[in-house]
Each structure stands twice: as C-alpha cells, then as structure tokens.
Image (cartoon, rainbow, N blue to C red; front, side):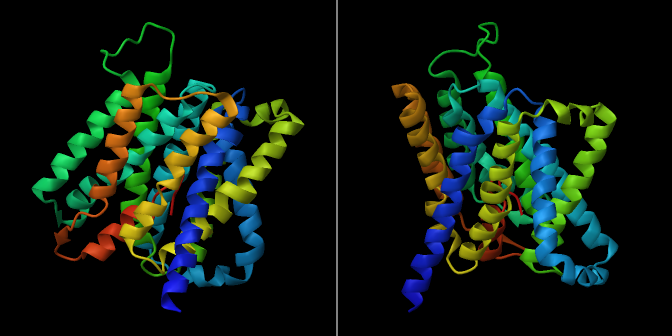
Amino acid sequence: MKIHKEHTSALFVTLAATLWAIDGVVLRPALASLPALLVVFMESSLVALCLTVFFKARLPELKQLGYKDWLAFFGTATFGGVVGAVAITQALFYVHFVNLSVVILIQKLQPVFALILAAVFLGERLPAVFFRWSALALVGAYLMTFGASLPNFDTGDKTAQAALWAAAAALSFASSTVLSKRALKNIDFGLGTYLRFAISASLLFLICLVTGNIPRLVDVAPPQAGIILIIALTTGGPAIFLYYFGLKKIKASVASICEMAFPLSAVLLEYLLRRNMLQPIQLLGAAMLMFSIFYVGRINVRGKNSSRADTCESIDSGCRGKIEP
C-alpha cells in the first residue's frame, strides 16, 4: 500500500512538471504581443480569485500570523510571484518560438541558487562536491545558450538575453523558496499558496497601475484572454497544488527525478510542434545541466537548524515557476 501511494504521489509531481512544460512551450508564447507584467498580473489575479472560493471561510486563520510571517509571505510573493514570474515570462517572449527549451532548461539552475541562499541565510554548510556539480551545471547552461562560441550580442538573436532573464527567474524563485520555509511555519501549504497568490496579484496591480499597463487590458484579444484563463486553471494554481500534494509523500530525491519531466517534455514538445531541436553541442550542455542538477538536489547539507530532508524539501518546493510556493 505504501509503495502504491508513493507511485501515485510521484505521478502527481510528474504531471505538475509536464503542465509547466506545456505552459512554457505551448501556451505562454502565444501571449508575446502583450507586456509580460500584464500577463503575469492577469494570471495571478485569476488564480487568486479562484482560490478565494475555496479559502474564503478560512481567512480568519490569518489572524494568527505575526509580522514576521507576513514579511516572509511578502518576500515570497515579491520574488516568486512578481520578479520570478515576470522574468521567466519575459525570457520566453524574448526567444519568440525559438530555443524555448533553452530558457526552460536554464531555469532548472534554481537548486544551485537555493542551496547558496540557504547557506547564507539558514546557516547550512555546503560540501566541496556542491561546487563541482554547480560548476558543471553552469558550463552546461553556457553550452546550451552559446554552444562552443563566445557570446555575441550583436546578431539580433535574443537567446542570450532570454537566458539571462531565465537565470534571474531561477535566482528569484530560489529566494522565494528560502523565504517560504519561514512563511509556511505557522500555516498549512494550501492557505499559504492562496496567500502567496493574493499578495502577488495585489503587488502586480499596483505595479501595473504605476507603469501604465492597466489601460492595455483592452489590447488583450479574446483568444489571448482564453489562454490566460487556461494557464490560471491548469499550470497556475492547480499545478502547484498537484506538486505539493505529491511532494508531501515522496522523498525529495524521487521528486527531483519526477521534475525532469519539465525540461524533457519541453524539449519534446518544441520538436513535435515546431521542429526546433537543440544542436548537438547544446544537447550535450542540456545533459550536463540536468545530470548535475540531479546530483545537486541530492547533496547532503547540514546546518544548525536544518536537516537534509528540510533542505531538499525547500529546494524542490520552489520549482516552477514557475513554481513557486
């Protein structure tokens, strides 16, 4: 029975990772004519509104949160729901149907950043092997983006800029992951996820208002509005719930294997839909990246107030994207 439950939980994590790949390759690029900020605002707002239906009765529970809890949630929403989400969306828009898998694969650098931030803010000690695997991951990311050539930013190809946005997204999501360890201390992940989306939507509304993006809502064509709704109802809130539900019942190392469905599905979808395939040197870089990230996620780190299980769980829980706590 236990094995059956573990297999079911692993399936949920794999399904969530596959949904994120569909988001990045199939859905989000169709919104490239819109400002990335506006797209993320609409998506977050829809998710927050949908979750309000389920968590409205539980809102009084928020009174038990102290100011440190609220600060942690504010940081989580800022880095994960605003900066990270906008950065990964902008990265996908930059490549505009070309080399989408590069952006998605580079976003997998998140565990490297998460472990570094955990070491800085949570006092966790990083073994020497971490730096070797991280170096290999960075080399792989470079080969995926530039191949065996030196960077050339004058070609008009925005893949390099997109890669930088993707790396910024990975760093932001990693920051959100570390903050989420504190944010979820006094609240369960379901209500915590709702609160994260609600705060993100509020912040994005203010930013869109100040930057003049709110009037551009009239530029959203009906098909694009439909895609944003699909994202909100599938790869947004629901995918994160599937991910957390599965993650609670399996080891982090198992989850890290299941999450490989994200980049692998992205590469496969991009080839099937657009016949775009990475060059051999880029495929080598992708293999180096995924292989090293898998082992980074399995590194045994010890700290004053944390265990290996806590560390790995925090790294996995911020995946995403999207994939925010």
